[in-house]
Amino acid sequence: MLDLMQDEVLTAFSTYALIVILKMMFMAPLTIFYRFRKGSFATEEDVAYKSAEERKKLLRTHPDVERVRRCHLNDLENVVPFVLVGLFYVVSEPQLPAALLHFRIFAASRIFHTISYIGAFPQPCRGLSFLAGFAATVSMAYNVLSKVFTL
Amino acid sequence: MLDLMQDEVLTAFSTYALIVILKMMFMAPLTIFYRFRKGSFATEEDVAYKSAEERKKLLRTHPDVERVRRCHLNDLENVVPFVLVGLFYVVSEPQLPAALLHFRIFAASRIFHTISYIGAFPQPCRGLSFLAGFAATVSMAYNVLSKVFTL
Amino acid sequence: MLDLMQDEVLTAFSTYALIVILKMMFMAPLTIFYRFRKGSFATEEDVAYKSAEERKKLLRTHPDVERVRRCHLNDLENVVPFVLVGLFYVVSEPQLPAALLHFRIFAASRIFHTISYIGAFPQPCRGLSFLAGFAATVSMAYNVLSKVFTL
Image (tube, rainbow over the protein chains, first blue to last red):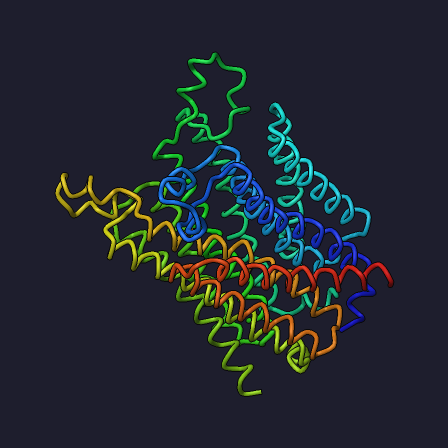
């Protein structure tokens, strides 16, 4: 199966896909960090060691924690489709330069999306970075479908 | 790697998987559309260009926006497992007619699920369409596991 | 394509991946069960057969239902990256014992995570089980990336 790794497009895809997956996974420790820093928890047993009064104060939502959670969910909604569509795209044997262009635009757009979201950059920073990643995934899906229908 | 594309089951799977993934991705622009139409935003910088008074009014949840978001999350919870299970299913070399049956039931059920959810169709429209897609995915997983355990 | 099934690492991965995907999918019926048991619904048409007064009472959130939903979302955030990273990991031809160790730690950690979450076990039960699964996925990603960069 190691032969597959010789394939340049697959190797490039593995790298970029893993980068965006790891970036998405990083949102989990970031959420935990914000939960502790802002004192905002969702689950009772997380604050069980506190006094009854403090517990009530800690079991609330905080805008900054919700912001990180929305960013995480947005990653799930975009990174997962990218990786799934990308698998079919790699199998459809695209040209390496075209493939690299798609992977790089997507990876860059998601990294910039996270920075804009967490840093609360003024719009349209977040909007445009979302759009660029979205367009890259749709373009890959279109490429696969157009190849499938002309087989 | 293009040899893989000769495989009829894989080609069919690519098509149906991409259709449901694109349908799932379409929920993102639909959410944005509803956010603007209903005037319901979650993030401060999205309403920064408004006056302080209007801003307060726009930073609230709206039932129709939350409905689209729940539909999107439900897609993530069902479409992603379908595609992942489907990859193993295709590798396990199912018969083409059985595979097509699974893929078509799933794709049809998810499209009908979205229409029932967004259109607020009376139950059990949404419930049954969720169930059909769920059953198709479980059936594919069962097929793979039963083949793995009899190797 | 059935040749692929001969590969022991892929067979093991299929089994463990399907187990955790099915476990994740099981959260959907569990949510429905809790929604009925606790009388907590999110969508109007789900309570349309009730009187206007009862309807209002049923359209609210309940901590136990929200707990199951958070557990489901946590699964999406962890199980999906595991399966996606695992696909690249399998292609990178790891040693079978090392691969089995990763798959088993992940599967065990996610099952224990769900039990701790739904059963509201005192911390750090949930925290540590999350961490073990997270570490297994990161370790697989690291293995793939280190192989890609030394090709």
